[in-house]
Image: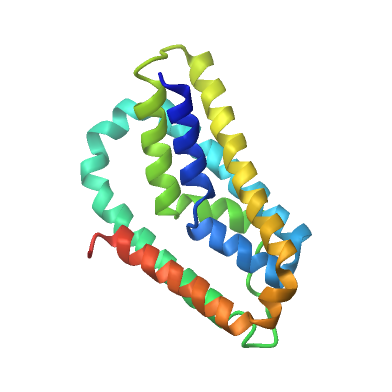
Length: 193
């Protein structure tokens, strides 16, 4: 296995904007870094669980993926459109507390995030299983990828914290831009284009 290619792939996929990273950025703006780190904890746990499940169930999933991929794309796209609406509406009402950014929200988000689902379904079978067959090796790779994901999420929290005052001054514009990114992601994942 080309470990450099593997690490680059993991970094590119986890650090680039996607539903989780966009929600993290928005959450820092509205709830602060400390509350957002709870969300990151849930997102990281779910990310690791999805990687582990992909590793354990790879053979079974390979047989059913063609049948569930379309359904997963539709559900994921609808969820991202819902998130886009929520991000767009943030700050327009007095009560932002109803937009949860806690641990459970981060955990659940990952299970409906098509970017994460597709990544976790492909990274282990594509990069690890062809070269390593032992459960211990697979476990180590799951841990490494989970740590990379945590670092990516935390980087978005730091970015949001550094630019918080800018983001708050331009809240309406930033929420609109983040919502548009989510709409774009939903359209791309849906397979419409």
